[in-house]
Amino acid sequence: QVTLQESGPGLIKPSQPLSVTCSVTGYSITTSYYYWNWIRKFPGNKLEWMGYISYDGSIYYNPSLKSRISITRDTSKNQFFLQLNTVTTEDTAVYYCARHALPGPQGFDYWGQGVMVTVSS
Amino acid sequence: DIVMTQGALPSPVPSGESASITCQSSKSLLHSNGKTYLNWYLQRPGQSPQFLIYWMSTRASGVSDRFSGSGSGTDFTLKISRVEAEDVGVYYCQQDLEFPLTFGSGTKLEIK
Image (cartoon, rainbow over all chains, first blue to last red; front, side, top):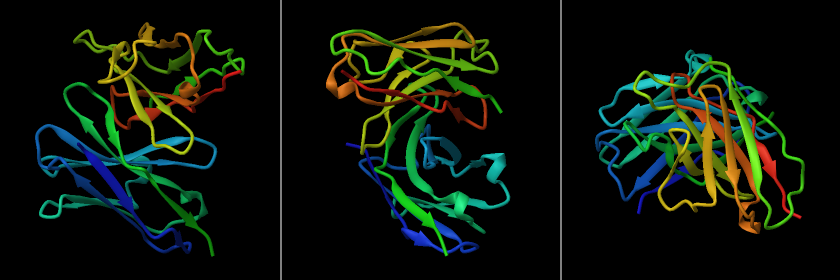
């Protein structure tokens, strides 16, 4: 059984870095050909794909976030991480981690429960 | 970026009736390999999104056959037959053709 679990700060102040961890159990994040993603849901239901780190460590970011985002991993702990710098109130969202397969079934087949992060002074 | 546009449902849908949710993409999602890279998800209240459909019309593992996907390269429909209480939530389409991956704005299904 594949499970993903996010953990994060809950509340952070503007301009601080946002850090969220995704802990994966039941599946190795180094198994071909899976991609480990960060997706966020803003108040009002909009979903934004943020980026991924792949089974072989390659990374791809959404260009809209490219200057602020970093995704890394610790294979020994089977975890991957999101860091988003210089946050503003507009980064308030529920942050999800999710697995994506390539090739098919090609979509986000497993999701974490999500962690709410509020940016407020 | 590929923009995904979803339609609204005349809400609520009577229990046992069918519901059709539409989605349009700003670019054809039909790949030269013949696959159309359009996915559907359901987010039930208080839960994370659930993977329903990939390649426009293939049900993900464990998904009820009451859910079916269809469409062309840019216009897509998710049909839910005989809607039940457990179908309530927000449905999202998502394009998987090119980066950045993008989602529709969501369509809420309520049941009468």
